[in-house]
Image (cartoon, rainbow, N blue to C red; front, side, top):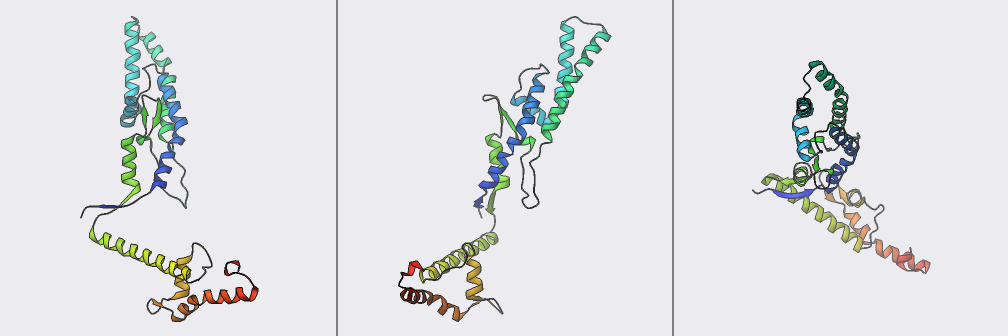
Length: 236
C-alpha cells in the first residue's frame, strides 16, 4: 500500500528549529574568528567546508595563504618566514577553538522530555541575509525523519482505523451522556469516568446496567432539586 501520513509533530519541529538560537553566539564567534584569518568573508561555502572537513581544510588554506603572501613580498629567509607563520598561530587557534565550541553546542535534555535536537551539521549560512539558518531542504528533512508518522502497511492501517473508531465511539458516548443531563466530575478525565462508572472490565468488558438508569435519571433529579429550591436547573 502507499504510505499514509497520519501525524506531523509541529511542536517538536518548532523546538528543533528554536535550538538554532542556542548556536548563534558560538556561530557568530566562529565567523568573526574565521574572518580574522583574512581569507575572505564567511560564506555558506565555508560553512559547508567546515561541516565536511572540520578545521583541516581551513588550516591548510590558511598556511598556503601566508606562504603565498610571503612569496609575493619576496621574503625568502627561512627564519623570518617561520617566525611570521608562528606569529599567526594564535589567530588560527582562536578560530579552531571557536569552531570546536560551535560544534559542541547541545540543547539541554530533560529526563522527562527527551527529544531529538538540532546539530551543527544541520545549520547553513545565508549569504544574502548574512545569518545562520536552517535551510529549506534541511527543514524538510527534519520534518520527514523526525516529525511525520506514516502508516506503511495494512496491519498498521487496520490498527489505526480501529483506534479511530474507538475514539469516535467514546466521543459519541460522552455527547450522549451530556445530552441526557449527566455531569462529569472532572474535565479532561471523561473517558476514565466512563470506564469506571459505566463499564465492568471483568471477566470481559460489559455495560453496567444500573449505571445507565443512574445517568438517564440525573436530569430529572436536578429538576426536582431545582423545583424544591425555586431555581432553574442551570442555577444548581
